Structures are given as structure tokens and as C-alpha cells.
Amino acid sequence: MNFIFNDATPEDVKFYAGAGNLKVVAQKLEYHLKSSCPSVVKVIEEYIKPKDKVNSYPTNFDNTKLDAAKNNLNSWNGKIIAFNAEIIKVNKSNPDKTFLKVKLDNGAILWVGDMGNSTFNIIGNKTRFLGYFTLTEKDNDDQTELGYLVISFASLDLGTNNLTMYPGTEIQIYKWANGNVPKSKK
Image (cartoon, rainbow, N blue to C red; front, side):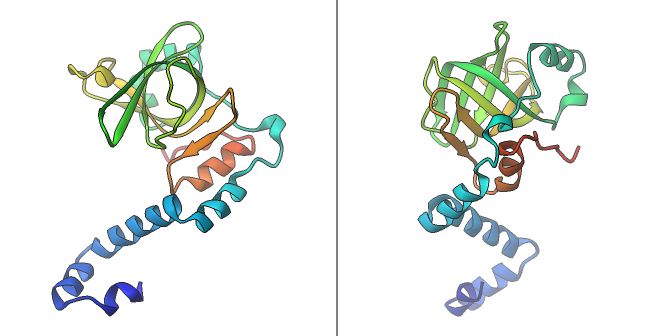
């Protein structure tokens, strides 16, 4: 952090010293390092590799659980879920946010906000997602039509076993890779 203050003007120092501002700057630096520095990315990739491929990347959500969630949405809000689905629509109306319409085994539909911005968001791909079940306001946007969606911070292409993740979620991905769906704080 010293390098931030080395070239800072008095106005910059005042900003950085403001309540919570330095934390925001640190978080943005962490995100940038974890997503674009090849050496850091390599270390993270080694860290999150599964120790035992047999039990890696488990699921805890399926058609039955979706039916239970629909009957008690508030109790599911904020829970981390992992599930398999087929991508049936890709919505990139906002370049920074990709939303995927996916189909579970029985044909039930979910919308997934892909924070990992994976390169395998292709219609027909079978993917395993890890993310937060999240309530939304129903409106005219496709992704909020159900009143809930999944904010995915990791996705695994089931055809290639390629994994993408949102930088900063390494601990959750490590747990998932090693046989445990992480628990949310809720």
C-alpha cells in the first residue's frame, strides 16, 4: 500500500484516508492481481486443484430442491448451491454481466448470473454451477422473471472440465474442488 501514498497528492491522501475508501482500493487491487497477473493466477490455479478427483465439485441442488425453494423462497435466499444444467440462452445485454437461462434435468428453468465470465457460455453446453440462490424483484427483464436467480461465482464445463471462477472466491472453490459445497454465512 505504500506505493499508493508515495505519489499521492494531499487530495488523494484525504480520499484514501476516508472511511472505507482504502479498503475499496485494496479490494480492487486484489481483484486485479487475482484476475490478470499470470504469476498470481498460476498460484491460485494450483491451490484450487482437487486433491481427489473422485469426490470433486459435488452438487447439492436439483429439481427436488428447486421445488422446495419455490415453496419457501426466503429460506433459500443467500444459500450457496451447486447444480448441473444445460445452457439454453445467453443474455449479454450488459457487456459486464452475462446472464444464462439454464435447464435442469427435468426441464425446470433457472437464470444464472455468471460472475466468472466463462468462455464456455455456449447454448447446449452442460455446466456445473456454484453460486448464491438470490431473490430478485420480478420485472420485465428476462433474468428476473422468476423472482429469483443464481449468482454464480464458479462454473465447470462438464465436457472439458474447464473451470472459471470469480477472483476472490479461492477458499470456496478449494472446498468445492475437494468434495464440499461451501456453506454461506446465512
